[in-house]
Each structure stands twice: as C-alpha cells, then as structure tokens.
Image (tube, rainbow, N blue to C red; front, side):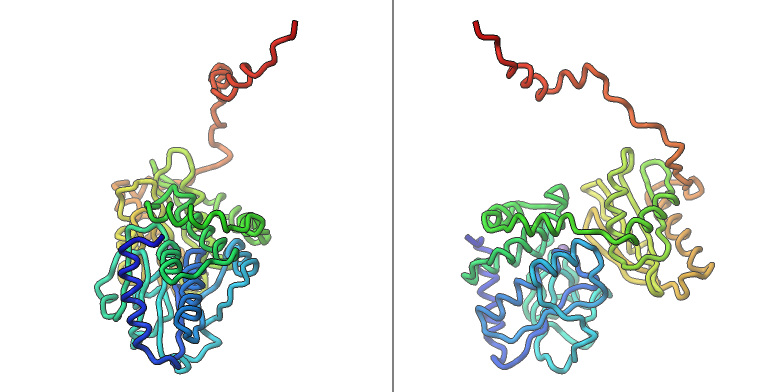
Amino acid sequence: MASEETEARFAAFAERVEGTSPRGRWLVMTHDNPDPDALAATAVLALVLRRRFRRRTTVAYGGIIGRAENREMVRSLKLELSHLRYLKRRDYQYFALVDCQPWTGNSQLPRGIVPEVVIDHHPLRKATLEAPFVDVRPEYGATATILAEYLEAAGIQPTRAVATGLIYAIRSETQDFGREAAGPDHAAYDRLLPRVDRRLLAKIQTARLPFSYFQILHRGLEGLLGTGNLVISHLGRVDQPDIVPEIADLLLRMEGKTWSLCTGTFGERLYLSIRTTNQRADAGNLMRRLIRSRGKGGGHGTMAGGFLEIGDPSSEAARAMERGVARRFASALGKNPDKVQPLEIERARPPREVPAEAVAAEPRDREAVNRTPTPER
Ligand SMILES: [Mn+2]
C-alpha cells in the first residue's frame, strides 16, 4: 500500500498530467551515464504515463550506459530507451526529469526548457521549484522507491521484469541497504521481492566484464595514492565514465580508509567520484569545492560525482589538474597535501592471520560440534 504522502503527491501528479494535452508527446529524461536507479525509475514513470494516463512517452538518456551490469539490465529487462542524439526536441511537448534535477550540468535538458515533472532523491535545488510538479525526497535511498510507490498508487501490478528492475535499482543504489537506505526503501523492496525474477537478477549482477575493465582496474591499482584514511586513484583514460564511481566504491572497502577519490579522463573531461563511510559527511559539498568553476558536480552525503573540463586529456595541464584535485581533496579533509604518497601494493603487509582459537570460538563451529552424532548404544 502506498503511503499517505505518496497518495497525496500522486494525486497532484495526476492532476498535472491530466491538465496536459492528451495528444502531447512526453519525453522522460534522466541524468547522463544512467545508473540502475535512473534506468528503473524512468522505465516505471514511462509505464505510468502510458498505462494510466494514455500519454505517448519516450525514455531518453545522454552519455553512455557504461557498466556491464547496467548494459545487461537494459538487455535482460528489455528496457526501451533512446539516446538523445537520435531524437528531435521539437517532437516533444512535455518533459519529465527523473533521478536528477534541471540545469545542474548532469543531464541534457536544454536550459530553456522547464520540465513538467521532476522526481528525484538528491537534495532539493532552488531552481527545481520552477517546475510545476516537483517530488524530491532526499530522505529516500533511491528514486526507484518513489516510482515503486507511484506504481502502486496508479494501481498497476508490476511485471516480473519491472519488479526485477526496481529491486536491482534499490539494491545497487543503496549498496544492499548499507548506504543511505530508509524505511520506504526497505518496504518497497519487501513488497516487490515476491515478484522478482531471480534468474534475471543473477544474470544482471554477474554480468560478463570486458577485458578493458580489468586493464583499467589494473592501472588504477598500480597507481594508488593515499595518506592516512584517504585513498586516491587516477585511472587515466577510461572507455566509459561509469568505471570511475565503480572503482571509488571498491577502494572505499580498503581497511583503514574512510574516504576514496577516483578520477578518469573521458573525452575532454576529468570525471571525479568521492565516497566516504562517514554518514555525517557532505561529499557533495566537498565535490563542489574540488571542481570550483571549472566543471559541474554534486551528490549526496556519502557519495558525490562531477567533472572538470580539461581540454586535451593527454596534455601536461590535464595531469596537473589530476594532481591539483588530489591535493585539494587532502587539504579539505585536514591532511597535508605533500603527504599524498603512492600506496604500494607489493610492499603492503600480508593480511593478519586469524588465530586458531578465534576460529574455534565461532558460533557456527560450536553448532557443528553440537551436531556431531552421539554413538548409538
Ligand atoms: Mn539515484
């Protein structure tokens, strides 16, 4: 059952959509380089517009669907979406923006277009309120959760593919509920789970990875930098920007590190991702300080992304920008930027061995002992 808040918001949404011309075409857009949350949320909004309101609707994105998992998600769930380069803006009368907000530099929404609808879970920006219908809930872990509630409010039963898409979106966006997930995310997940296609979900989660992924990962690990609780990786030229946040996530799992910064060049941009384990941090604000006026960026409390315009990515100036970003990252977190040093994997200490008595004390082992059959007499 959708929450009272969602019922009210959905009623306002319905009123807005019903006020538009029934013949008008809708373009549902999301941020560039869409992630699973964006892919699931746009698919569900399009479904609601078509099924409940009989509106002609196209889903569109900019950038690249880069991660192997996301490509597999589109393939396995048969998501229909078009790249904006193949569409003409004047073919559409109404625009909806999902999982991002207008004019922040991370979508292709033209400056002069005010979207009818904005649905997102990032912190609300003032300019967003120019849109006639805004549903921004920063307390939600995923935009997919908001759309799962809309689906219920619209009285539409999700197909197995739709349920699987929403489940994967919520899991990946909240890192299996380890990050910024709230009550509504858990509730939507639990309601959708009986309808999930487990085989398709597994296929998406264990998608085949291209060789280039391993090459870039290798390069990133070879050049690791750090000081104190910070870890930094410059990947150099990447074949798709999504690998930058992916490796930032991976590096954050390193013992002793609570902040990660990863960079990579694609086209004439240096892409940046910041992650932290500190739940009270403001990574979005830190990102904006790293970028200043040379690009665009933002994010949530514990994760942020952005880019700097660097011109020729192979130039010395581009390398200097990488170093500058790493130094500002260290300074902003109270570290001496001169202490950012290579982290050499081959010289790292081997992992501590778990003492034998600790293993024996594990509850599972006790159970195993208890289950040992007593000899029959
Ligand atoms: Mn999202």
